[in-house]
Image 1: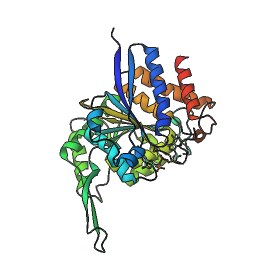
Image 2: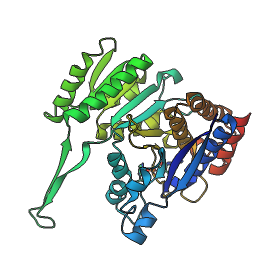
Image 3: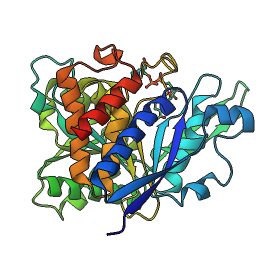
Image 4: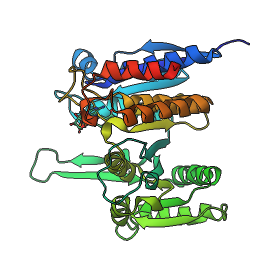
Length: 356
Ligand SMILES: NC(=O)c1ccc[n+]([C@@H]2O[C@H](COP(=O)([O-])OP(=O)(O)OC[C@H]3O[C@@H](n4cnc5c(N)ncnc54)[C@H](O)[C@@H]3O)[C@@H](O)[C@H]2O)c1
């Protein structure tokens, strides 16, 4: 049988981005070696804030065209002091998500065995949800205006964009996932205050739901939804929400399920017309960059999501098992998890456990 070669574009980005990706790449290579039926071909792109300071742009003009030739993108983190965050985020991360129509942002919030949890009275099995975050429009559409700039009459307008097409497709994706996984589906919105966008969202959620009578549904306002994530997380299975709400709530999700060093996200183009992108959801952590302290487990988890997406679900699960094993043993962990190991040592341990 001919070996399948996955072509992966690697954008380490800034700060701890390249450090944590290096460990994920080690793990992916070892997985391929053990399996034998596939291999990875990694191509590295030096794009990010340093690139911006040298070239005046976060990636070259034909960057998207270059990336379009890959099967997937593996991204570290973007953003660093010295470059405004809205430039770094919009010039790279959001540009890729939009150009490749990665309209699903899939973020698991699951308390793994051995992971620290700050909530009292919550069992491990109680925290096991998956966020389906709309990733292509909504509050992050970039629509708006800055009028009379730098004058006393200054006015800024930041518009949210909710199209029927965009809203229906993300909600349908979430229903399909809930049906496939036999889980409930919760829609999070804010229809009482956002009287156009979120009333529309709620309406589409109900409309699409008619095609899925077998799926148990709930609909919460975002304020109550965040309270329940802390007080009663077991009520959640699959969650669907807008770009902004998903961004904020998944950081809360990370906080209740082991911290930022353990939170992964996949930016999917489900039709596979364009490459999907896999990333730890944390930022570039300038406070610990270059010190070997960054936790690479989130990037290993996102590698597991990549394996799932390529259809290697057995390996995807194996990577999660290994992360759990390391957290239960508590021997080789980075300082954020109470350990003393370096980023590289954690990656090496994951590779060792894979081959065990
Ligand atoms: N997806 C992305 O690329 C992304 C996401 C969020 C923030 N950012 C950017 O990153 C920069 C820093 O942002 P921030 O400080 O708000 O968030 P951050 O996630 O970089 O850091 C928040 C805190 O969590 C810690 N932390 C994060 N990841 C860790 C890891 N893997 N191991 C151990 N500790 C970890 C940091 O040390 C810091 O104390 C900004 O420029 C921001 O715009 C990028």
